[in-house]
Amino acid sequence: MTRPGATGPLLDVTGLGVRSAGGHDLVSGLTFGIEPGSRLGLIGESGSGKSLTALAIMGLLPPGMAASGSIVLDVPGAGPAQIVGAAERRLRGVRGRAASVVFQEPLTALDPLMKVGRQLAEPIRRRRGLRGAALRAAVADALAEVRLPEPGRIARAYPHEISGGQRQRVAIAMALACEPALLIADEPTTALDVTVQAEVLALLDGLVAARGMALLFISHDLAVVSGITDRILVLKDGRAVESGTARQVVNAPSHPYTRALVAGARHLDSALDWKAR
Ligand SMILES: Nc1ncnc2c1ncn2[C@@H]1O[C@H](COP(=O)(O)OP(=O)(O)OP(=O)(O)O)[C@@H](O)[C@H]1O
Image 1: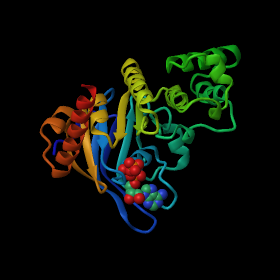
Image 2 (image 1 turned 120 degrees about the horizontal axis):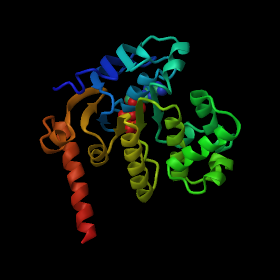
Image 3 (image 1 turned 135 degrees about the vertical axis):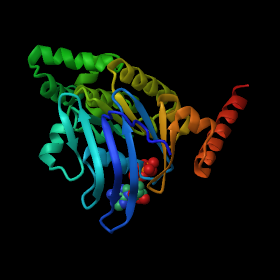
């Protein structure tokens, strides 16, 4: 198996394990790297350990779960930070600046009782030290950057007063507000309508490129992952079964599980082609 991102990684994961409170190994021996500005897709069926891997990278595993191995985030200018076993105080300094996450369900990131503008203002104030009119202008800019119409109205709305697609755009703006070197997107479009999915994917793609961020994109959908990432790591039962460039994995899958994923995605494509006739 080729080791993705072998030189100078921003994220270096070596032998990562995640064990449940009950002693079950949910993720085992996972090794990969992500270089600055590059994109890795993590693909696998439900329960394969994708989300736990993302949470481990952020130091956000549920209580009782334990990570082992090594996760190093090395942001230029900040020095390498070992996430496994780090104290919460240390993790707070790394989160946001080094890496931030967009989750499947935008309400995970949003406080239902706080207006959108105020929520977005907090990380912008912390990161850029802005106040008053300058902070309000930066919030409006951040909402405009994720292509939200009428940023003024959205800023004054509570999360439940805007659509699911708009909420996910706000969650993306929140994740970007800290100007992270690595963006982790965990099934960011799965909860959205199909037409909105395509728009949000295109938005993410453009923002990651414009800001030169690295991207860890997690999905069960091979077509989506191969469209947005350069390299793919395939997970099954908490273990990596295959990795390579998106092209290699799609055109010449070596593991039977990956072959099944590709066959499934091809069926999907041909079904869509057929429908379009
Ligand atoms: N809080 C938890 N307590 C116990 N087991 C958990 C917990 N969270 C996840 N698991 C188990 O860990 C395994 C991996 O879960 P994970 O959420 O990482 O999968 P996933 O690949 O992200 O799946 P999905 O695509 O459905 O989100 C699964 O067997 C799941 O049941």
